[in-house]
Image (cartoon, rainbow, N blue to C red; front, side, top):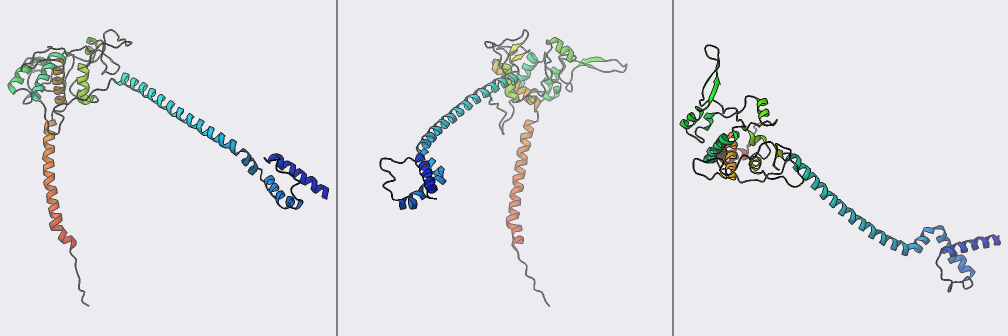
Length: 343
């Protein structure tokens, strides 16, 4: 029994001593009594034997700290590199998407300070008259305005006599007459602006397959309409290096795809204004956009005026409601009724 205990104790001592960093220069079994060994040291050794993680953690704690420090530094470096990589890839992705969007939808148009955009602003009617002249002399040979009648110009840019004389210059096919035949007559105020082509097929044949759009609502039919039309008319330039344009097309970065069939039409001095205004490219572009904006929204001035009338009326109604609420209904609202019930 004693030998077994000795063997067991020896095994315990050997295993524990080999696994613990004891100082052998100062520690010896001869200097420890048997009672101390059985009473104190063995309990401590057995506790450490039964809980090896305590010993391992105490042994490896310096190495673990060093490893954790190195790991945290490396993980922090990897995190920084990942963030930098994500930022660089995001930048190139955004640049690629912006370039693709510009190629597909055209260059973004700048915003111009149009004089009629303010709440209290109205159209520049002199600019509308000049814009109609630009449309008649430059644009009407290809583009129609099928929703505009000559009478719409009366009181806006011309007098009634001027518009009648203008309408009489065109010939309109009308009929049938009493004999059932079509005939031509001079134009009148109720007639629409003349069509440059008889049908869409003729328009495409004359323009190399491209169909010139109707300009009656062009500033409302395009995103950022006024700025887009002005930028398109004045944005022609030579194609940059690496960009090839098919024959018959012209480079314009504001047009979707960058290639447009319409050549540059606004050149300095292309028209001679009646009022003597210098007919520069920018001036003609501004005037024709003002005319097209009026054509798309001829009721804008009346709408703004009606809006201010309604604001004035509703303000008076609000003051009246506040007066009755404060001085009339408040008395009835705060009144208390006491009922004396007679048995």
